[in-house]
Image (cartoon, rainbow, N blue to C red; front, side):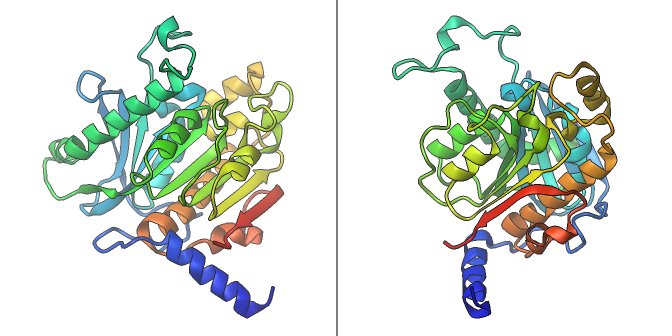
Length: 323
């Protein structure tokens, strides 16, 4: 491909990726550096919001794009288990919302919602509807809750600039939301995604970044072949980027204490010698670069596509930007 052709493709891709960002905070730093914004935590109980919610947001008064995140095990891994990564992303100028999904008695929901059929609502569709209910509530009330905590107004979470994100099987209901609602989200950030139900290809354009790890499909596996990151890449529409990280596993995106439990008891295959701070810095960098490009309108894709800039080694890297 000659330089002119590449330039045309890249401009076309960026036109699809960029959104109108007038008034939105834009982070102009290196996404792999620590963000410059102080981050504040806010907890909303399930007696207030539809779901127990953890919000990580910059303290500086401004208008920010929003990231809606669901944890693993269909959202049953609490959002605070990812607090280090979520705070890092927020420090680059995002209101990051983590939701907990525990409406049923653990470990199984009632029979009437346990299995999804053509005539009966299942766990996946029930969750996606609950998440949409949560998003609608947050769009109406979060700004006021933040103002109450800060004791001043002016900090605005702008839900017109929203990305969805998830880890592992938490991506199952997120995909369901995306398939049923074509306009609510500007981008999707999939961290080691997994889904039993993602069987129909995406029918519209939503920019996606998809991450996989080497050990996630190795014994004891937490991702099954052809239902993980590679499957998501195959089913998603262009524009999309995927990478598979060498020498890392499924639990390493979690906070250090929970990663150590996972590694010790081998719930999933893990790298017992992983430098979690370094790996979380990598997750921060790719997330901030992708989200700054898609939500804030500032091109930082070179921090992803130029793989020499990455602080990890890759087994696989693919992109489809020709759209």
